[in-house]
Length: 204
Ligand SMILES: C[S@@+](CC[C@H](N)C(=O)[O-])C[C@H]1O[C@@H](n2cnc3c(N)ncnc32)[C@H](O)[C@@H]1O
Image (cartoon, rainbow, N blue to C red; front, top):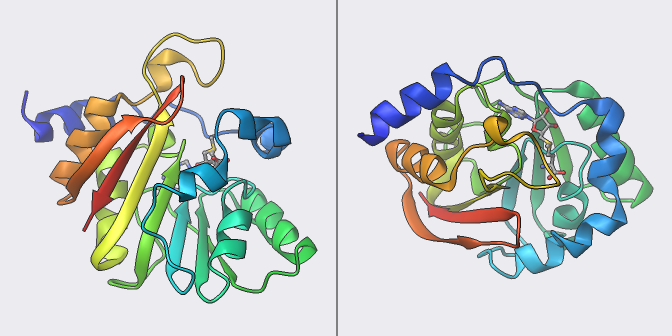
């Protein structure tokens, strides 16, 4: 199957999938989550710099946004989500931490509210599988990245397991790689982030 066919099939079957509910946002912020996915460990794998502009796409309540804003103290963090209530929680977290380098963006499903060539890096953690059209979201991500910019997809392996979304709601690593390739990204590497999630590192 060609990558384009894969994306078409994948996106056609994803529109019924639900967004992570705001009522469960605390689960995403639970400190115990670091045992599985620790932002500081993730950052060690990314070509981040303290002065960069980085987008957290599908940021949720800010589990990654706040540490990103602390790290890139000389840059900017663009928090992007389709749910305003999630962005409100991110802003609250930034205010509590007295961080002023975060910018909130309420997104439409497949059209990012970011200018062309405006960001240095993009992180998509457990959000690509919720997108109605993962290929379109990745194309938009690439459009917003400057030449040479980096991207990282972290998402659930498409396997039955005791944690995470239902298996049929997940996006396999192969589908994520196919969608990113079709969107024009170079695939730098992919590996298991932990027992549950994969990471795909991208370059524009
Ligand atoms: C499971 S949460 C993960 C949040 C955060 N990245 C984390 O790891 O804690 C997925 C988030 O992606 C957002 N989302 C889903 N589809 C999206 C899209 N097309 N564009 C932007 N955000 C999206 C949802 O609203 C939700 O807040």
